[in-house]
Amino acid sequence: MISCRRATNADVDLFRSIRLRALQDSPGAFGSTYEAAIRRDHASWRDQILSTSDGIDRNTQFAFAADQCVGLAALYRDQDTASGEIVQMWVDPDQRGSPAASILLGQLRVWAAEVGIHHLVLSVTSINGRAIKFYEKQGFRSTGECLWTDPNRDLQGIRMTLTLASLRDE
Image (tube, rainbow, N blue to C red):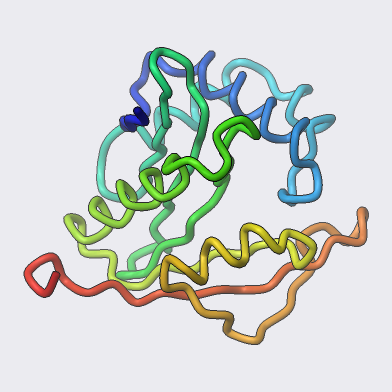
């Protein structure tokens, strides 16, 4: 059984370890690199968690199978708008195909509706066909916009978008 919860101020070390695992496991899925992330100091990880553990601008969710963290996803509100961007989405390879990704995204969608975010965007690397199909099944559609995810590694991405119904419409 998969469960999710929002990151708390006490999750600095958990966040760091899961993010590093994600970057090692799926280097082509992220604009960030493991090499850059491993050089970050503890304070930068702490500041990132503190900025997302409460409030209405950022939310980071962890997915758990029993007591093991198996996934991560975050939603960051675009400054002063009703739009937000899904970032850092990752599920452990052993849990791919399980409900973990859907549950993570579902938690972020519920939170988005609660805080007045009605439009979601994300970027996915064009080589990540499995993720593209997942997002399409979740209702995201390509905007047709291509962008450089990381030009240094020749990674290109596509932009996808989803407009959320209000909770009372669901």
